[in-house]
Length: 259
Image (cartoon, rainbow, N blue to C red):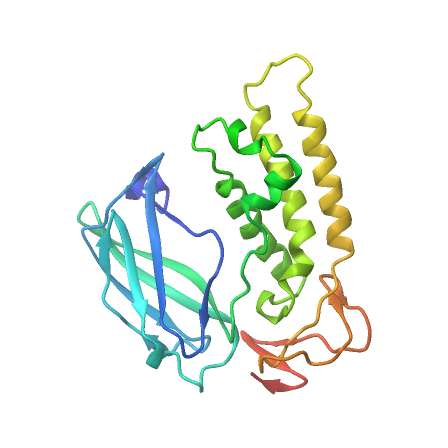
């Protein structure tokens, strides 16, 4: 059985790990039970390609109760194909028993990073930082969660995130969805008369939906670092003549050619 309580932990997988070809990459995996980290006593790691071939097997270290490994730049060679289908396989000893955790991974020329920070949220609502109930003044948890969901939403619509050359085109969507998440978090246990957190959460969710529908960006399907054309595409597919990536098995292809 893989019930967390039975094995003593569950493994946190928020979104695919994104490797960049030719660049060293540090990765980690958290084992948790309830609100607490569970520290493995030992571990090993393998990065597997979409064909199941071994890409790298660096040593695992346990730092702050978290298993970590670094894949060297020389292991992410030019012959590796871009796209999804890579697998991190962690073998971790927990409570004297080896558990194998798997985490999906992508290989890209360049990873797509979140374009929104807390400063963007506070620019619209300056008092937000002081309003966070945790007392930390940080809204990063909400931003991180929304960005994780955004990557999944893009992938679910057939848009490989690393193909997007203009992260700024996602800013309005991520900012509005993050604000909705923040105001929704304020609703928990709040009974303040006249409180409008629910209305604000709904308003920003609606704004996010509108922003998603207007996203258009330049795409780089062949991962050569430049736009394939000057025609913009959106999360629902091509806006004009540009061809979307085809999926062949577990490998990314572009116009019939395996990347």
